[in-house]
Length: 492
Image (cartoon, rainbow, N blue to C red; front, side, top):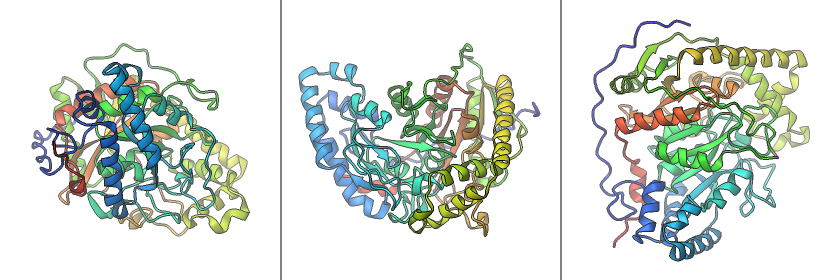
């Protein structure tokens, strides 16, 4: 690793484009509302929970045939929950949110995560279960007053970083319907970007929250491994459960509700917490990954002067590790093979089936070598994080590709094993378990969102969110996609 010369700072970014004038779902709000805006409107009786949920469900009916963000919608159960929330607000007033901080918030859940009142297909023809109980994360959202409005689309068992499968049409990007929303939490990110709920619950095994957040122009947060319980736990120990929303403040609020140990996830609550005193001046290492386009590199580097203006020290550093992609493939493929019966092959996604068959071909020695790469990567990045408080980089180095594709055409290979190789800035931090967040930093000349990723040390979630929130405030926010202009406008 090189401590290298300071990163050259480009000129200050131009102010973001004006927000779309037609988008208004709350009185006086000229943007899609977040948790705080909706909570304030509910507290001031500008809108009821019933009205808010009705509007979201109506918007799903109008927009989702083109978008493909939902596999199932709650409908009547969501409206019943909204009625109960309105009664609670009428009875308790502002005290209601002291007891239930997410009371009345319409939130979607990725269909890898179990829900008691909606089918859990996991994006596959092989399943369609209706669990007796919610997954712990969903139960915590409901206990905090959130209203589950539906299950969002995912690739089969979340295997790919695009949301394409046999169960439903591809999820499309609300900024350009011919482009992918990313994956495998593509339905979640597309729904949030289009205003179909204030937030979504996603999963991230190799970038599955951060990639679609970057492609759709929203905020996606992968907490430290084990910070939020993941049930059923994955044998690959790569998957994180986390929120997608339209602001850093909203993902932080959701994470506070979701975090904590659970008996069904032995890894939950076991991760170390960074107890170093929070620095007012952060040391930020800037990483450039191969394959990042010049345009995206230029857009993400707009953040540099903003960080410098806050007194932070930003230095470009050399990539401190070799690409761990071959090890990731072996670990993921072995895990997919372990949960797939040969009799199920006719029903599997063809791309995932190639991964499963690779997993079956691996020897124990090969898998142990992959685990050794993971251990070495964790060791190297722990040393890096002793020198830097945060790492920064483009979340994804390319624009969204075709909606029906698994990846960009140049990344295809006959064996089908380079399905994630086009996103080298995402998967290393699943292997290490570090917290990472993607936030929108600009748009390309084609009008497509670009994400900036910040990565902290294991357990360093609080300072990571704090730095991301400050940078977001300096960037000034970004408009909602044109698709959201079809969202209903309230008249009071």
